[in-house]
Image 1 (cartoon, rainbow, N blue to C red):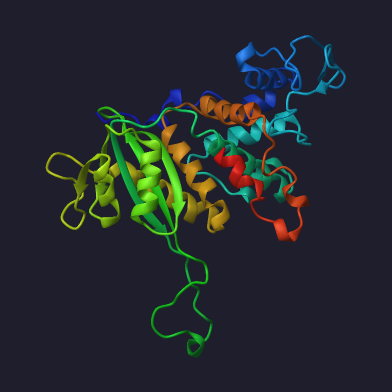
Image 2: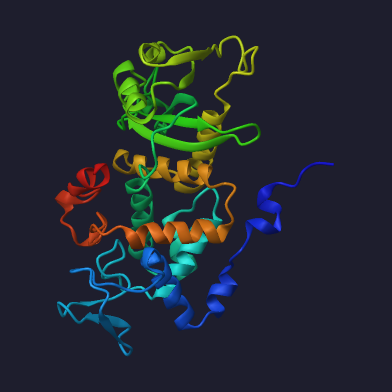
Length: 343
């Protein structure tokens, strides 16, 4: 008898859109409070001075600090600061994102929520950037680590008339990008348990060594293919090589299947949902897929609350706040994004 896939089991679904739609406003509000102030048992504290002495303004669903007089809400000072969306709509959006195991497009989210495309795009990217900002909240990887790279090659559309089509190799004006994945293996039957991704120009020894040494402990074992760019890793780590020109699984079971599993999910999301992405956003999409791979055994309530909790506990301003109000010169990821996400 075959074991049932986790996503088909009852344990995989602990929350639904019907449940959230049936909640009253108080239950939705309490969910946000519990996630925002999880370290204080859902009890609010001032976002300016940190005081827990405050009183609740019920008509506005806000608090006023008795020590400094600051007025704050459940989203003040978070990556959802100043949002005009109702809390229920945000929660429904997060549940939809959690349920879509291969991601979804902003236009799909727009139709689900009946909001403008700009609103759906910004909300989704706030969630993606929150996942990227918090991905280092764990110690360095250790044990057996799979490292691999895959290229995202931009497609070139043929001209309508045959005489206008160039002869020989066709080259896109969009530069090719390589996604480097570093994935920690779990125990027997666990597969990959933690995944980090980086967008680099090519599989080159300098970038690969820098990212691996920055995230992996020195007593770990690196598993990679025969590409020469991974050769320098032998300076700091024990390295196992799987020669893909001969086999995909070595005689002792060595393989890069967990890295390939990430690439398979990424391609399904990219070609089936996103279709096209700027290099500016590629790290956000890659990291989202890494998160979905690492949480594939979580139930959907756990995933949804984790996504929302990360957005509500990040106290810096979201790099996508006011995105559509920026000038054309600064459209795309704002200049502060690199420093904000790298901090």
